[in-house]
Image 1 (tube, rainbow, N blue to C red):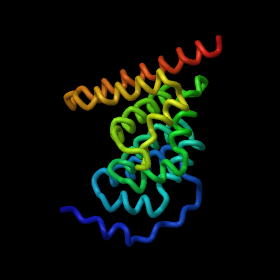
Image 2: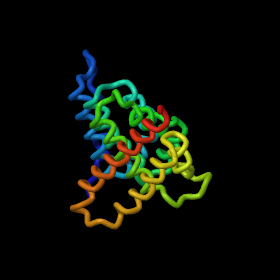
Image 3: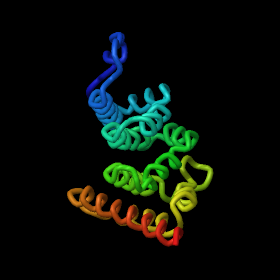
Image 4: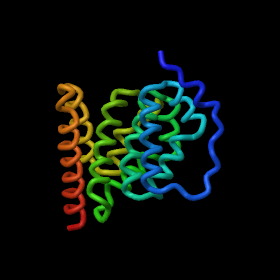
Length: 191
């Protein structure tokens, strides 16, 4: 078993200049990897308010960081009720909905938000109300509309039955359909 305890005792270097977009994206990838491979990193991320920090990055940084940030958020929330509760308390679903609904926003970020919602809904589906993210379907319906929420729910159920080699491409296709559904909904409500 790999032990990483010695890393957590190291004092960080003093930073003299703000981090570049690439440095922030790289740091987020490292965080994602640590959380996927090392359970204690998820706990530490919760103690350091990682979800709140990531949602701030998602709201304030550029496209490069936003895409990586969504991946890091999934890794923090996977099997972590504490981080899922933080996501809910920070109104994370509203921030994701804001990005996906922004038709002037970057298409790739909007697709990544669709993928995020598909993964999130698929992971928490079937939870009782009162549990972390137990109202995810209702929240998605309220924020994105009934048709889009139903599509996300149905597509997230289908993806779990696929062969792992097909999941990524199918996830991308399903996210594209979510965006199309959202855009059709926006067209019908604006007419």
